[in-house]
Length: 230
Image 1 (cartoon, rainbow, N blue to C red):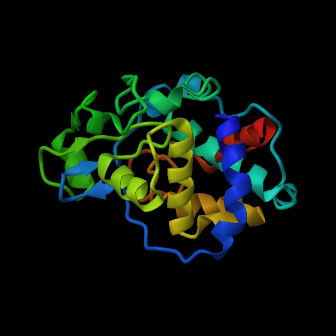
Image 2 (cartoon, rainbow, N blue to C red; image 1 turned 135 degrees about the horizontal axis):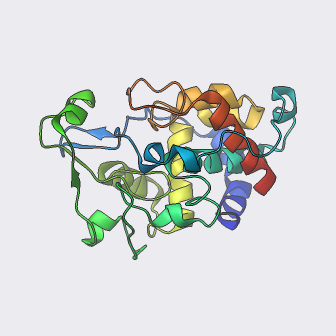
């Protein structure tokens, strides 16, 4: 979403550089047998995920970019790896997509909390790969595919009013900051930030979740697309 990150980042940049970091957990919750560490719909639509679009940006040029533009582009890159690009990204449809590709309507809260959606049962081998018991589910929702426990923790921490696109952006930035990725993003070390963020988003290069993460070239191209949009 073009306006959300722009409005968000201007007020957060200085705050993020100074605030203490918490230890971020992967989006795997043993208490609720819930995980986002499963292949996303983007991986079943590889033909709709072009490797190249805008000309690649050299790393030294990324380092010279406005930190706010870098953060906005990084969020765009996450959305592009978690969802089908460009179909679900350029029109911001990703903000209302539930795990498996179904849509939800209300942004009043996470769709499982509102009752609009229920956790999607996952095959046992997915559960095992995520370190969960058989019968696990995924409640991954929105642009950043946040499961209900992750969303609830961040919503309470930031006192977010709803599950709107702006609130989803704010929650994603908080997750990035918890793992120390925002410093790297602001400095233009996008590859370093991607590998840190892969601890949370299994679609990113460097993820150890063994769920077919995107190639680094692909992720960097989507980041460059995001810079063009910022």
